[in-house]
Length: 497
Ligand code: ARG
Ligand code: ZN
Image (cartoon, rainbow, N blue to C red; front, side, top):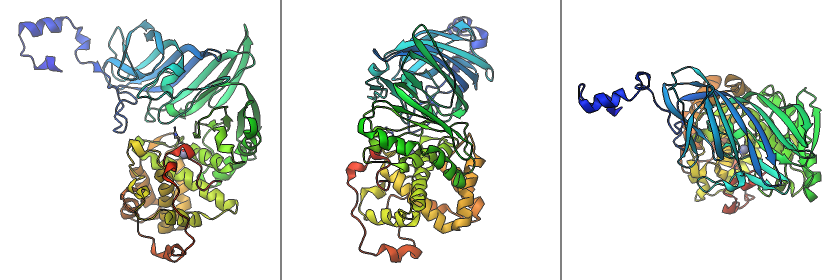
């Protein structure tokens, strides 16, 4: 940039220009972030990934992970260098077959400088050879890789990929995946999509998983450990594969009694959201001590804690609802999290109604009454909560209240058309809260700016809708849940058990 500003003919400038190949003068480094204001360094600029091929080997005894990532991408600008987001130790990088220079930068950036600059809009193949002990790596104080007594797990939001593969780590760049993992015979490796094949040699069993539909990086998951695997097909024809750690203790029965209903719940959700978007469904329950669940694409991550109180089909409904709202249709920026969590929570309310445990409207009234006007709950704006409150309980509960308010405003016919139409309109893509409002206005024929502003953006308790006011004056309103539930470690807590 500066070079262009030096007066032509100046000796210094001429010398500098001579040192740089003519083709490089217009090339610049790709940005270290994709441009998400919540997380300025997540994702990267200058290229778009279409496919990740990960060929890995993991030793549970030592937590050593090693392997090669081959990334198929396309440049979106003239590049002199570009970043991947990654924490493990790199031993070689190749770009289009030629070895490339690389260096770590910032908390989690791997900066790659190819021998020759890359022209805009050309396909590139990046090979990264690496190894490391993921549990020893941290960035911003996060140590996301979970060790278990018999293995390890990558599953978190919004960041989990850095601990196991180099990536453009933002939902704005979705890609297909082949994940091949060798583990000692007798151990299993679980990932997304379909299990294409397995094979054993030299004491190592290799599991070859394929995700053939676009997937956000945080929805890619890897779990190694001793698992029992069950397979089947839902009545509606969706193949199901679930995996349970053999080490779930007392929670084993309730975990199976919940997660084995995946096929039934996928079919039930299809009635509201349209055809299931992926070629496989299922979940896994590792022997972890963490408390949350995550909608990892096609293969949901559940903590055994979700089942400590008995069966919990509600968490299964929540995570499977995300397969449409969050996974197939991903957010554009992390501020759009309401489209994920508001609708996944609302699906739990619909399930409650189906199970005869309270209608969606009753649950909405209950949540509304549970939080008095002075409750800090109402200061979180689910439509743009900020990174610190991205998974605040208000994003879920006030988020679902907003969905109920929308339903009451536009009527059931338009509402259920919208619920089913949205996953079709943006299938396998990305969309924002603003896109959702526009689509809701289109489907319902009503202006909705004020309703969205009231329920999603104003930092105050909305006035009770007139039609509902009578039921809200009843003296039976429960007291507010303790603020220790603020963070979503207890995601599927309040109305689910
Ligand atoms: N999307 C997840 C869920 O609602 C929440 C994950 C929050 N992350 C965390 N580390 N607690 O099920
Ligand atoms: Zn969720």
